[in-house]
Length: 114
Image 1: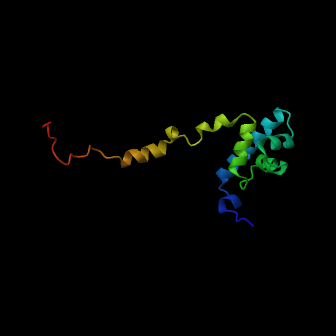
Image 2: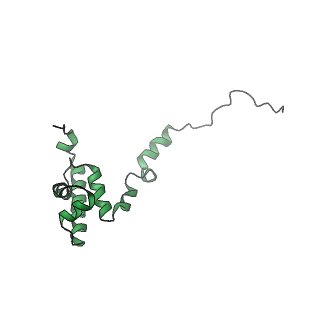
């Protein structure tokens, strides 16, 4: 039996909230298209039970299943902004703090003799 990791058993509240919202969004998109869970499952290549788990926001469901559902619904392009390095203000600040304050010194003088 596969071992379930800790975050799948008891995700932080913020993670659980986002998964539930994502599942609700996928369900709403499916219903707006008039699709049954079986229809989405067939398009993604998973079982109806996986689609039900996606729509519940179940944390142990593979991210590929969530992304597959978004792809089948035509919503995958919206994920391009997730973890975009250009929007990572904290990461940029840390990188800037580690950057050298002055240029590196030359190891030896340049020789202009060609």
